[in-house]
Image (cartoon, rainbow over all chains, first blue to last red; front, side):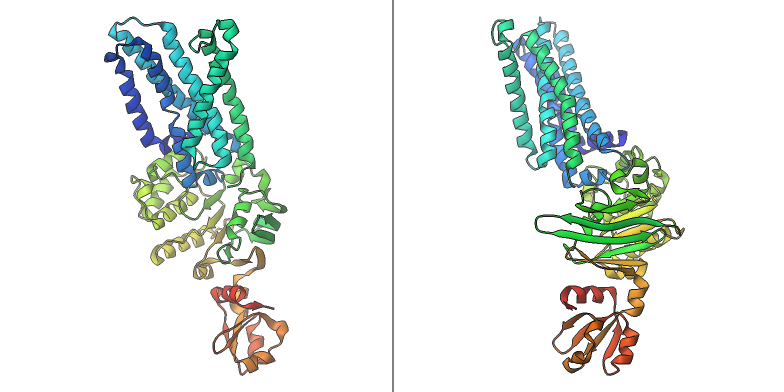
Length: 212
Length: 287
């Protein structure tokens, strides 16, 4: 499986470099941005920044017909899909790591910051990334990668919609529709983490019935 | 030689505008089988079905003794595949591709892969994006060989190669089957290549199997009778496989050219090449 994961990363190598540069730039942005209310958004963007590459990489693999070739390799279809999801998870971890750099940078500035609001940035970024990728990959697998940017955009909008819906559903408990409430963040992350394996199972089923 | 590397029996696959119907052939171990046919005849569909990439409507396929629907990674390890064009991310270099594939194939032979790159004059550090069509084809062939498979399945593997490199590759294919255990199924438009290396010719036309015969039988027995209309009328229609009216003559494909020479001494009977056999089937009238 490690060969498949390696291939996934090689396919998006040039895009990843850009993501790293952007994430690194954002990590140091607290040095010049003094408004602490923006920090959670910076972290959320950083977490999401890496998974946006997946659509392009999947498209490159489809154009090169690697998708077809990898079916002739000595691996099972579950393994092929598993390698994709491990890659997605690794990309999200990269995002979380750069978010951590931002948090360290904020603390180095000596400015006062709210732990809960930073945590919300992580939760929002994680929820957005995991839900988006969980929705995007099965759809791309089903209809092809030609409209990958649009699918990613729609997946991200759906993820935001789901988060708002969660906040609305929890409003009797949280008192109002509050996206930044810790309970809402925890539920969003839980939903995202539940969607990820469900998305994997759906993708495996789509892949098994797909003809290349 | 023992048994078949590949057995296809009654393979049928229906698409909206095309049907591959009732294709049956075998590739005995230690042999090279050449799959021929015009564009859209069903060669790639057949190869895709053999590799289990498409679901078939009917028929049985056995690859290296296993039903294709149950091909385990251990069996796939023993199959080398080349598709038309490249199949690797253009962002990769052959060196990176080596790192990818050594993590997938247990039998990946890194040293052999780099030796093949050298032999085929492929740079290990250049991105595949910058490769010509021929270089990409050579890279695919190097990959197919580098894990020491027992069966090679090649779809237009030699297209895009110059005659010199093509000749070297054909020699590699011939060396590959020398031990009489390794086998190749190769589809190609370049029938001259198949005349050089194939033991069997499988001809598919409009989704139907026209024949699957030993190449020597085709080249040693089949013939083309070239004659005028009067002589054409005299030819026993039972003997005509396919015929074609040109401006000044009839060309008639017969299965036994020696017999035709004796029966029609006034007609010119010449040996038929694979190309001519295919042309007469495709462009002529079949009896």
